[in-house]
Each structure stands twice: as structure tokens, then as C-alpha cells.
Amino acid sequence: MAFAVSSHIPAYDHRPGAGSTLVFLHYWGGAARTWKPVIDRLPGRATLSIESRGWGRSRHLPGPYTLEQLASDTQEIVADAGVTDYVLVGHSMGGKVAQLVAATRPAGLVGLVLVGSGPAEPSAAITPEYQQVLSHAYDSDEAVAEARDTILTATPLNVDLQAQIVADSRAGDPVARAEWPLHGIARDITREVRDIAVPVLVVAGEHDRVEPVEVLRANLLPYLDSVDLRVIPGSGHLIPLEAPAALASILQEIPFGTGGDPAAADRHSL
Image (cartoon, rainbow, N blue to C red; front, side):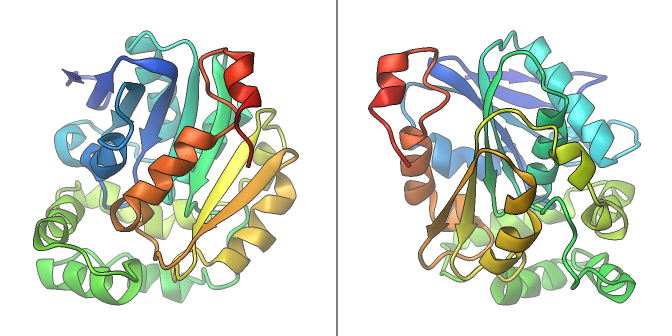
């Protein structure tokens, strides 16, 4: 595993291996290590996990922290790591960033996996009042723990993961922390998303209270031409931490991102 920390692009962890590289983008409040339980279940697979600008090891980087900047960062990191054949795997906020990247039709992108993703069209629940409340969800350790236990998760997590969620959510630059709830979450990107040309798999948590299955069906799927939906039973919003084995299994079975091996692609089905 290679670790890269730069003065001008976000930190990332790159593990060369087989197949198209899975490029992981984390949720608002997460970190590259959010994906570790999933990556650990993909032995030998090429992976690249990004720590978004303004968060954790990338906290030192200046803004803006907009969706567009995070999308630009993603493409620069892919180039910096020398990745030429990849699948974007974006969770929540990271899913909305992944949609913007895919909409530019970058060379080398072969597929998109959106995990509990922010939808292209904001749901009716995203009101200014909701945004203001959400912007304070990570104001203290206690606030993060409350959000973790009552909104973000639907299954028990061990004490180490519970502490990790609190630490990562609190590790963001204050301006970066505010960008998603006050701006990014309400951004309508339906026009851009219609330009996505690669196949898309949407993964939802059965009990996700942040991006419910019905919201993804209504506010994301209609804007994608080649799309399938998988629902993970029992999981809440933090699918990479709540259901890493189920998510890793799905990533192993996707019919794209097999490293250019048509026979391998033929063996998989959704």
C-alpha cells in the first residue's frame, strides 16, 4: 500500500493489484479509512482511497471545498497515481462528487458505483431549515455520537468504529465541514448527470434514513441511462462500516471494472 500526502492535492492510499482500480470517495465526515473494512475484503484488488480536501490528512489544503473542487481533485489524484482504468465508488457526499466526475466522461473510467449516494436531484426534505440543523451535526463529539446512533446507522458497530466516526467527523476544517450541508447537499446536478456514459450501480441501505431507497429511486435513477439498484438488507447509511462484507461482495460481482477481461465480465451479472 502506497501512501501519498502532497502540498497541493488531497492525501490518498494506493494499492496496486488486479482489475480496474476501485477509486473510493468518502462521505461527509468520513476519511479514506472509512473504506478499510471493504478494502480488506478485496484481497489482491487494485484500490485507491482518497481523503477529501479539508478532511483528516487533507485538512491543510485550502478551499474552496465545493463539489466541483472535490471532483477536480479526484481526477488529479487518479492521474498522480498513474491509474488509467478505474471504477469510481462514491459514498454519500462522495457519490455526488463521483457523479460530477463521471459526467465529464474522463478517459479510463469504466463504471460507477454509488453507495447511499447524494442524489442528482435534492429531495424535498432538503430545506434551508434542515440545512442549518445539519450544519451543526458535527459541532461536538456528543453531537456526532448522537447523529451516529440515531440517524447514520441502523446496525451496532464495535467501539473502535464508533470512536473512528467521531474522530473523523471532527477532523474536518470548519469551512469544509459547512460546505456540504449548506451548499453541496442542495445542489441540483441533474443536467450534468445526464451526460454520464458508463454503467452505474446504485447501492442502498434498506434502513438508510439519510438517503432512503425511495429517494434514490425517485431522485437519482431516472437521470441515469444504464443503471441497476441493489439494496443491502438491514444496513443504514454508513454501508462501508455497517455492511462491508456485503458491499465487498457486490464490488467483486459488478460486470464492469474487470481490468479489460471480457471473459471475466461475462461471468458476472447483477
